[in-house]
Amino acid sequence: MTALPLRPARLGLAPLTLIALLLTTPAALAETREEREAVAKDYIELALQGFDMAAMIETMYQPVLQQVAAGGVVLTEDQVARVRQLYLDAFTDPLTTLMRDQAGIMADMMTLGEITALRDFYATPEGRSVMAKLPQLTAAQQPGIIALVEGNMADLMPQVLAIINGEAPPAGDEAPPVPMTQP
Image (tube, rainbow, N blue to C red; front, side):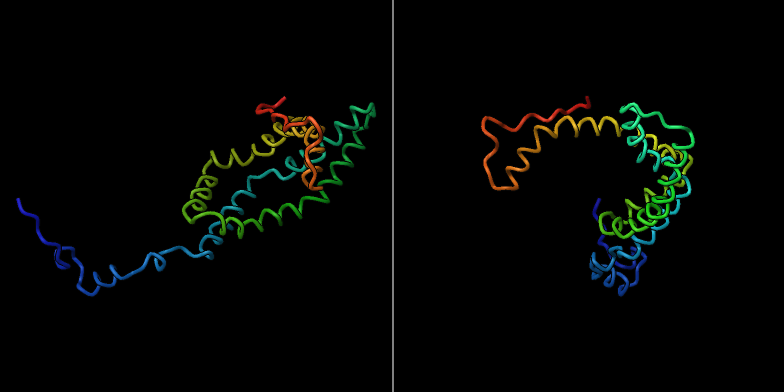
């Protein structure tokens, strides 16, 4: 069996079309930042529809309330409600704006395919469910992250200050191992 030569007519292409296709550079076929940003804006609007902003903001003030309670202060329901409202008033609009502003960042960091996949995922029932659960995920991780950071600050800060000040690490101190699991 012999191979047939590839001729434009066999491919169903006119000769000029084939030449134009072969001369087209990958850059001409590349996506634009504007295309990526437009899809990122679609993704963000979808994400915001299912996102519980109030729950996210609650993760911001809950550690404060926990510290107050650990200090022995008992807050009334009215005080907790007032703190909640204070945080909602202070952060709802700025956080929404910040989330919308990430379209440009996404367009600079991700491909059109990646952003499209995110948008398409969050348009599904599973994607909307995941988005609704993200504040709870953040809240569940926050105590462990805070404990990890606080547990290492006493050892790390002298070393950070030594580096900043151009000094040798404190005598006898070698970099302590950083725990790989949450306390």
